Length: 124
Image 1 (cartoon, rainbow, N blue to C red):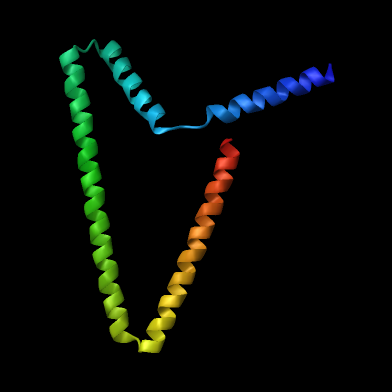
Image 2: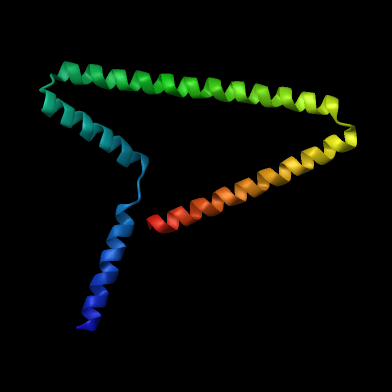
């Protein structure tokens, strides 16, 4: 009896672990399901569904372009800051500044990856 209960508990935990994984295909499928739900709830025609789908795709493309523009702007600001720091600091100070910055970036990367592993372990 104990083995049966224990087996059922492990089986239940395993099912919940696999239920939390999400892929891009799942996301695409969920978008399609939401669109079908809208179609049913609002009594949309096929033409309206196609227009809504096109609208969503165009808005997604706009957001992607905006993010790319913001990234480019951030990169330019970082380069300007680097140039100004190089003007202010001596060559030795600037070299040490670069080393400290690289060390902090490595620490942040390590912290982010450990957090990501912890979150993945929780989800599974």
